[in-house]
Every structure is written in C-alpha cells, then in structure tokens.
Image (cartoon, rainbow, N blue to C red; front, side):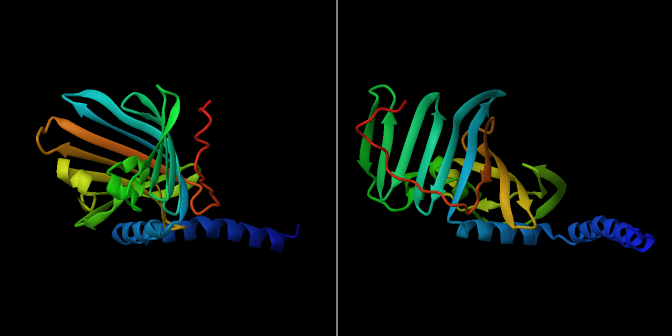
Length: 226
C-alpha cells in the first residue's frame, strides 16, 4: 500500500468517529421518540419478549413472562401468566387458549377484531407504549441493545391505554431507540397504583425480527402441546 493510500485510509478512519459524534449530538430526543413511536405503529410484524410485575411494599410479584410474535392483527404468545403456563393464539377474532390442566385447546370467539379490546396487554405490547401527549423527553445517553447502539430517552407521558390509565398513574418510561432505523428496540415503564401508592407496576419489553416474514396459523386443536 502506498503512502498516499495510507493517508487516505487514515483520514477516512478518523472521519467516521467524528461523523458519528456529530450525528448523535444533533439528535433531538423528543423528535426521535415521536418518529419512532409513529413508525412502530406501522410495523406489520415483529417478535417480542415481555415481562410485567408489581411491587407491594417492596415485595416483588411477577404478573407475566412471555415471548410472542405478531403478524398484522394475529398474535401468538407463550410463557407464564400469574405463575400458570400459557399459550395463546389470537387469529381472526378467535382465541385459542391451551389449558395445561385439561391438556386441551379452548377455542373462544372473542367478538372483536381488535386485540386491544381484550384488555390483555401481553397480546399487543405496543399498546403499553402509545401516548396521548408527552410534555418533556430527556436524553439519558446511548446504550447497545443486541449489538445496536440506541438512544436512551426518558419521559413521563399521559397514556392512551384504557387498561393502564384506569388503574395506574405517574407513568415513567425509558425507551431505547434505534435512531438509524427510527424504531424502538426496548422499552420499560413504571407506574404507581391509584388506590395504593405503595404498589408499583413495571413492564419491560424488547422487540426483534421487526418487519421480518412471520406466519401465524391456528394450532392443531386435536393435538396436545408437547
């Protein structure tokens, strides 16, 4: 390699960190949060890991730990809710719920095409992260999520979820934004119970395989789950 080539390469390698620093310094946390939440609302498929729970007087209780996948309005999740194994499909207004005690599938017509109306946030994790308004968004810093550098922001919004709003108050969110793709990779929320301030809610979710091909079909209800 010639001296000229080495100088060009050295200049390029020095330029990249400076450019990355410049891009990151220009990020507006309020704009990034708004644009990423809007884009996530248009996402047609993704997989996710969600954990929810609450603390009562410092004692932690787990509500749910599930892994799920969404394709348009269809959802499949598996894990535990209230210390009970669950596997649920929600497809075309129909709920397929595996009963681990009878080892049979329960098939229920939900009567709605909207999973949010079922008041089960685990079926639609993005419903927990939709805001009516956000007064202030603070830039916390930058952290990697699965190898992708993300802008970490915090905010205290008013929420759209009727389920959350009816029971909880003083919402505090942390959101990890993939600022290059303008999507949310990870998000946490905490809130205080309206009736008992000593009870606090926490929900943490990570998103992956965003907009990747996912096919969700009804289970074979004649076969037990292994």
